[in-house]
Length: 162
Image 1: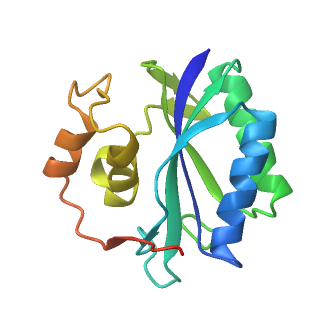
Image 2: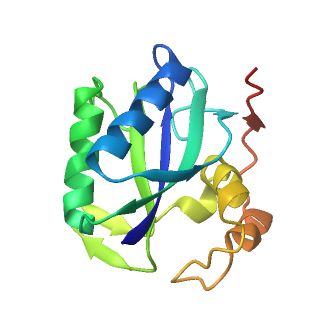
Image 3: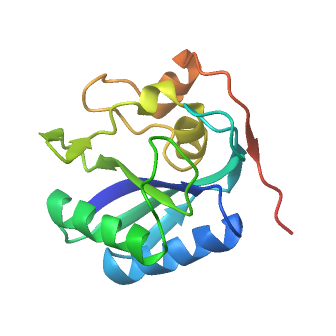
């Protein structure tokens, strides 16, 4: 089985319910989610004139290849109502492959590890919660080290869910 780290997030509709629905669909179509971070509320990155996001890091196991996985993930996003209207714009759900084992993939529709993860606190903070010692296969640094070195200053706050 392959170990895959995903980041899920969104800023439209019932954000928390959308994360729960994404986890259910991912588990049913990609493989079981075996670990998940807390939910974090994060300032919008890139296009900042929009509502804050909820984000969560997931670890799942899958028998899917990277290409099969991205195809399935895009299908889950579409099923949940994701429309790609503008780059970094508002969205019901966004599902990104952060790591797939220790593979390095550069294909037209897929780059693994995610090429900007080291620059984004909204990725690193939830990821460090579930995989602090995971080693980035290109930078040869742990997620903890990448977070310590990250220059992104946007707010990332753990959501307290009762």
